[in-house]
Image 1 (cartoon, rainbow, N blue to C red):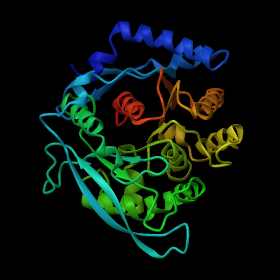
Image 2 (image 1 turned 60 degrees about the vertical axis):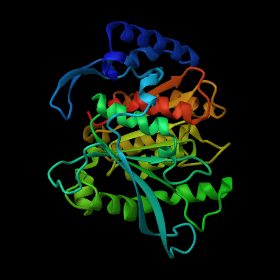
Image 3 (image 1 turned 30 degrees about the vertical axis):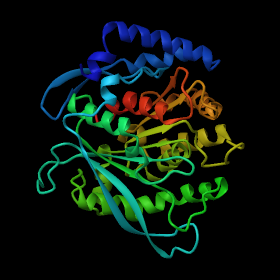
Image 4 (image 1 turned 90 degrees about the horizontal axis):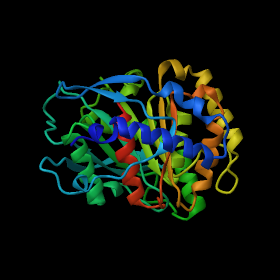
Length: 344
């Protein structure tokens, strides 16, 4: 059974409304319910097979649902993961030339010789101490991507598991912060161009103009420090990226761990949206954390502040995984719940 049939029956929608109300209490906010009123608009999704199905936008707050066991097993139509080495610079130190690595998932049936068929693209970022290709080392996550595509829950897409580290990087916590703060430069100048010049995305070329014009077909997701990286990608690269999935982390454009400066960061995002006409151009942020996550407070506090700003209505949602910890089991559930709302 496809994910949309699983999630969006009439009974499920009633449960989501109950969960949204419970979350409002959990966040100690008043008037939260009014934020969900505009999120129930029906939309039509056309899958790659041409099948048309009604898709309901998510409520602005709620709880995730677990991944079916069948999605964790090996698919009969598996995608392929390819290692990609590319030239970059050491942006933290002296901008010396370096070689970095990313791993690229292509869906079942991808044909590198087929220049006509184009694919949406998702970039994934690991957390503290992680590495390129990390997401694909968890076989159940890779299997889940295969099943989501196979069952028509998401369109066939290219998925890139990248890193903000390089061979010269120190991996202690403070050094890791320096690395992810500079990652947007690697993304803009190197990674995105190399990947999308080799694989068939919607960018007609890797010129700045063509990369920006194809932003509706590009997403960025990250976990933990990768979540912080995702927020920074929104701050720096919303011209290139339409969809964002920050998992277990808040925005550190100002401040750092223990000095989150939530109100200042949300005010900055509010201004960024206004100054760049993003509500008109479109963007979508699916923010999520587990109720047992050790660093949940920063995400919850940021969500509470984001939900006070009407400007984010229809573009920002916040979800909780009941009993979720700071681990890849939670990450898998976040991806399962969020990705069907990307590339609508």
